[in-house]
Length: 485
Picture 1 (cartoon, rainbow, N blue to C red):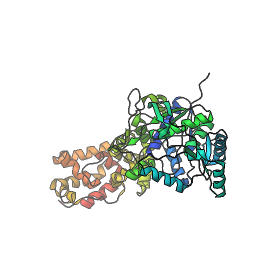
Picture 2: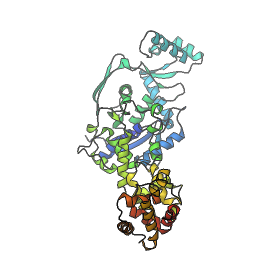
Picture 3: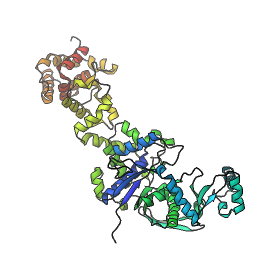
Picture 4: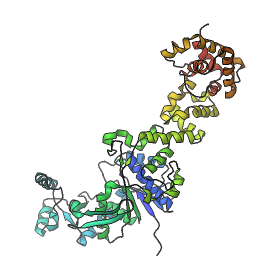
């Protein structure tokens, strides 16, 4: 027999923005499918008619594409593909549910919300676990007739076998066993509105789409036990399950919108100027270590080496400093033309047209060494674009008042017409010659010039700064500070 082609998927609910955990799970499914020359599918589980929102759908789709995670098929022809949606299959789910009823594996339940609330309160008072008591299995024809006449609209419940151990071999966690007594009783699979419940719809979808692997967060382990029962009832083979550890913060608390705000959403990092390459790299290695233990790798490289066997069983820890390290690496190492293009959004308040493309790239190259995110590029590069430099009182009343500093600035001003503009090394050499003439070097020579040009005593290479600013800007800044000496 030939082995089935690998098919993996990500199936987020459009009830919120793209979460870091969802993005990592999508990435693992994507890498696994690519490694095995299989298909990666995107499906939206949009059956929550109250909380699902098109804005969240757009956020999820754009976030995945931004990360470089592209799916291989959809309900349309050609591509790029739209995602599959559960709401497009409502009738299909109900038909499958009715077949289970005909086989005695599911039934109509007429319990009202008030009756279920009373049951939960009774269980709370007796310190019992909250679970449905399966009363709907035992309705008499007379009871059903009475409920129908009362106008009750039933849900469809799936019969969960009592006191049975559901077990499977998980590709990450190993052997897992769940007793059905911990699954909450017979479960609703179709609501009274006709909308299929997650645990039912996801099985029907995975069967229909011939999914061979289901890679998802470990918070779904009990859902997997429920779903295995449905697979069995439908007479369908199980996919290979793999449960990825959750992502915690440094205090070992689960990442959540309530506790961590927008820091859990991919779009926050996109807006802050993080590189998608860095986010991908960081998310991938959170719980997975390549066999060669490398830290830096591209998506293409990860597709070649990804292996579920090397995904950790332990919780992942999100560390913003660690992410910043990855992001700084990519800001410094990606092609300068690409970084400059991405930086434009963060420099939009400046008049960029005053510099040529090559000069703009030079500016970005000078300041990117100290950046952990592109959101910081505007303050770092501001002095290149401003007519006047903001200089602190500490500098203006301290360093720039010193006699030696005034001599340096005066000499630099006097030599502007002879300075080799456009030649960074030549500009630096001109300043060094002035220092030799005045008997000054190091900070006594360079700090006054930097402060006058940049508003700080540290910054990009001095020769490059002079060269890019050019004679007109340098002259204006020196004259704004100089006093006769």
